[in-house]
Image (cartoon, rainbow, N blue to C red; front, top):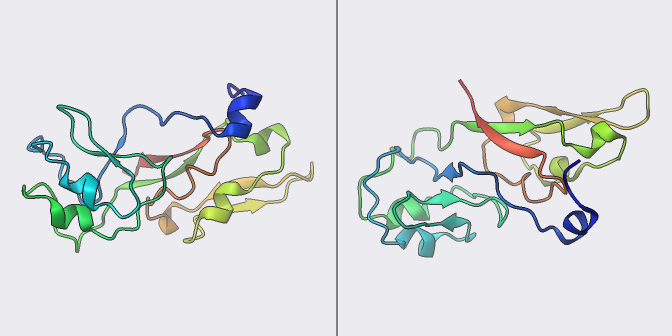
Length: 156
């Protein structure tokens, strides 16, 4: 595990590179950096860097799919809201501390959609199983993970 005790207990983690685009984002490079989406976000998870499209920082919270960012943007950079907001789905990698014999269910407890469940194993420590079909890509499971083992990946 690459996480120090201090990082584990203070929650000082860094969001992985290659951030997550906003819901319904078309992927165009037409963003002018006005930051209206940042101001409109009710959970404060949108970040904006010069010359880059806005990104979601799930270490700050989760996306509620309120679409305030879509409504605030003066550019035509979003798909219609009737479409699926994200193509990303939950993934739990080998850094998960349950694989090292430590009981933890923080990701499951934060997932309202029940896209993560745990199965009891012979060693007595339950192991995670993801149900991508239930995942909305909201990111609620990312911040609570003490070792940054949860993340999102694109579904084919």
